[in-house]
Length: 152
Image (cartoon, rainbow, N blue to C red):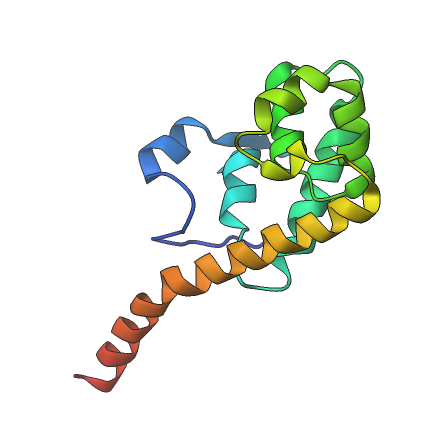
């Protein structure tokens, strides 16, 4: 098992909030692991790294596949807010028009006529904006680390 330990992340709340919302996994041997909740993990994955974006998509697809039978309103809203699969978003918007309307303020692509082609364009725009925000967030921190490394 691989564990990432980070003291600072863009897009998520402070440690206390993350801890309150954590998910606990229990192994067969009785060992338990506390990890970020799914919404917090998705928020933390919105980085400039290429490998994070397919992971967000897979996390949402897996959660949707596992809970599509009779989901809670909160779960439907999570899928609408964070889904990265055009077909899934079209289906969710069709099945849950009230939740789509409620989430449209937070995620503007939900205001659009939802076609797979249009969603692909809008998802790419969302991703590029998040990547740019991540680069901007980390730029001064990288400069600080570089100065520390050089002993300045």
